[in-house]
Amino acid sequence: MGHVDPPERVVTLPEQLRLLHPGWRDALEVVIVSVALYRVLLLLQRTRAMQALVGIVVLALSFGIAYALGLGMIAYLLRLLFQYGAIALLVVFAPELRGALARIGQSPMSRLFSHMAAGEVGAEVADAVERLSHAGRGAIIAVEREVSLDEYAATGSAVQAKVSADLIETIFTPHAPLHDGAVIIRGDTIVAAGCILPLSQKAFGDRALGTRHRAALGLSEETDALVIAVSEETTTISVAGNSRLWSSVSSLQLREMIAGRPLAEVAREAGLTARV
Image 1 (cartoon, rainbow, N blue to C red):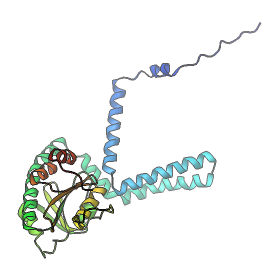
Image 2: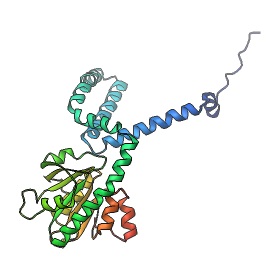
Image 3: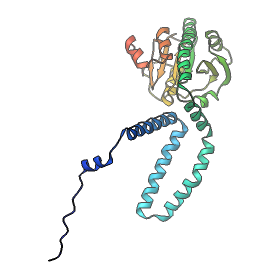
């Protein structure tokens, strides 16, 4: 009588997981890789590089489908595109890569100093905005956050001056050359003035919200910037951020927003309602 092999035992999923023997080093690696991927996506958010990343994902999916269906010519052409397209991307997105490497190189100590300086910048900007509001002068000021505003700064005139209430008030003097554009602030520096910002396409139910408010909201839709608008008609102070717009903001609330407190939190404590 021949030898009969015993039936092969099926290993269950819990047993397979136990065979992996994950340790603290594996958990540490998962956390490090997750944080690194999150930071990379945060740097690419709302930039041209993010659009390119989406395009690469679409091409990769197309290559996988072509390979699975045996479409040799399409798979070959996409393979060539990946080989030479990588070099082209390095050239086209060189500014974004430089900016990303510069942000990676920022030490925690430098971030601590920048957070401390944000309070001083907030005080100067709030003082200037309050003066402009009392004088009935229109103004729009964008405070850069994580996403670079270089492409918008390029539409205006370079300033590169330390933030001060007197300088901001002077820039928005009626009939001055840079009065109609936006001021862009990076850290404690006014990098440009007279800048053109994108206009939001949302419908405004309140006619008191004009072009400055539409520009403030438009920039907040495309970047994570904090944008302040002073109405020339109503003299009210409005703040746009995270694709939302709050009006009747006080100088104290504005200081807290510039210093880094979440806009929604400040608005909720002050009883402000988003206009858009």
